[in-house]
Length: 291
Image (cartoon, rainbow, N blue to C red; front, side, top):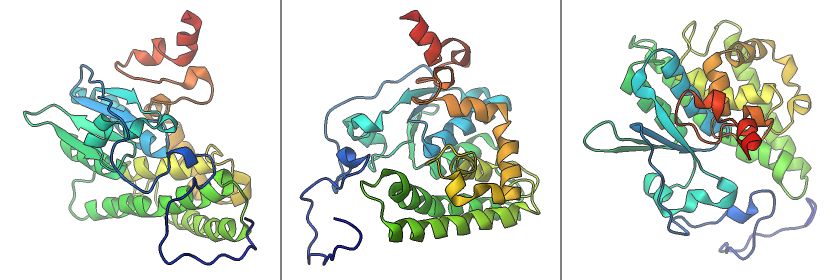
């Protein structure tokens, strides 16, 4: 069906066929597990189950930033969840996140294990747990949380809206692409205007707001997401570009981007992370060389 074909919605929608597009095989209108599969548990109290999508990168960057700041308790095991294979519908994963979306975190550091799902919730949980990357001043904290929740509410328009119709939909629909491109450009303008007078999202302090926003919007500026930088003219947002590059150069960010990554250059892929030394010895180029 093309965009000009008439369509009258049924009175009651029924799932009768796959929707098409890149992720059609894993999209379904029901929750719950599709198969039994327990999750592995490593040696550290923090166990992360994820993939290096923008939402996954938020958490691995946060953990690497905490370690870089000297918080030894932030050591973690990161296990790969292959969403294309449906790993997120395994019984063990659904037990941690009933919404079957990455990332999901288990914290075994106390007598009662704690599960945390949704990337924004994980960032806030870790920030409060370690007392870092979250303003302590009661007057500054709301600004940080406002931008954190701005990202959580805005990114679906970028990902599930623009990204889907521009890159993944089985047909190009002008109305849908234009509608979401307009909204994404408005969001880019929001960020650009704010960053004109602020080094980071919360003034001069690097916080979980930056860690949440950068993997989505910084990646877009750097043309790593949907290959849409030219289409959206991201280079015209100068202040956003300055902020993007400043965060890109952080060593913890560079490490965080590698964790649970399964695409791109093999030397930039660390499918699982269980120790800081893995960045030197367990990247995919080294794993391939051993075969």
